[in-house]
Length: 269
Length: 263
Image 1: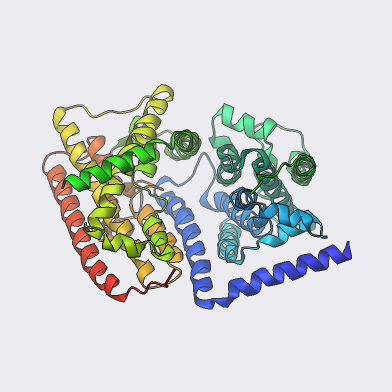
Image 2: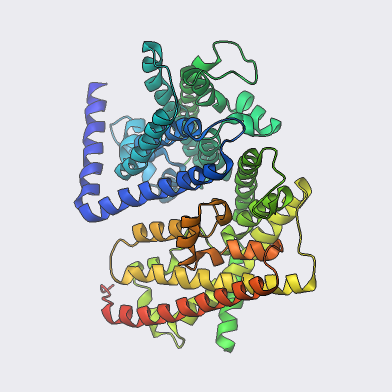
């Protein structure tokens, strides 16, 4: 186990060093990523001047959701970039995945160490900044419990979306290309939970409650942090289901990944 | 001239083969469109109309934004850049056709395919779910046709310019991403420009980007009429011509700088 981890550290080190070689280009990428997020959130924030609230939620409260998701998602993206279905699909098509299987190192670690997109730091920083904005615009009553739970919420989202990445990557064993449905769940899903769930129609909301339980990742914890009433009258423990959802998803994803590897038939390139 | 249309036709045929990808794109358009509609309607609350956009109007606005994504390659187009990095630009510049018109013809083919497979198709799908607004008069249709053609030309000229950055730097994708996000924001894609504060709208009007989407939608919904409509179309045309000219000038300088690594 220790050996595997040290290999992982070396692989990540290589990634980081190679990305930092072109300092200027790297800095430009980080700033560009940050500006992209800034404009996206900015367009929402700017219309709050005119509309004042979104179904009862203020800008600060929306920023709480938005910032938390941005931060967690880009952290996940950085760590799990090896499993990014588009990236992973390329390895499958080229046949380089077969080479990786032949190496005497745990394959999951290899894939994780394959790519570590440091420039996601730009988005992470913006996510943190938006979250800071939320803290300044809302009167959250902080308790020890809330302070302890916050990093758990981030961790749960990293696990959940990381799981989606892994599932998407495993599917490329059969489909070669990343499939659109997975992109929708990952990027669409994170966009969806960046806004309060009660603005969505019943179908959409129920899908993301009972089939892909993303509502518990962000919205319910937010209700807890912001001391807001639950419009759907779920049991009192609903806000604390996020680590359960996150870990369950990651666990299922890893099981699927194991299954995919066992039955993997190369493209023969 | 004949060569131009032959290129366009072949490009059209080429892009027509990506039908499976088009369906995948439509599903994404549908999903994100539904999200954006939900967000806008939640913002509207009890309001029936904001800045000239009725509830049906703002839903149509959202659908139109989804419809033009593929048509205008709003999320980025890097083909030219890639051809520079791969060295293909060498043979492209030797072709018996102006480099600009070479890419223009190909883009026209691509745009027409996307107009049908992604644009019209997504509108048809949304028409089944929502009550949309449609242009009422023949005049509106004509204005719309002009506006949408000019928006494509502006889009191409801008994408052409951005891609020319590849002649200067080995890593123009960052510039590309930034440029495309800028055009996306000021086009009114994320939020209708009329909803944004005045200072943002002023900034936007110094750029050609409102004319990619915002102007087209306002023509479609009939918000722009009479003199305002003519002025808008004229401004669109001026921007289109301007960007094309700038593109040609930059291209001339770019080609002088070109260094192709052998092989």
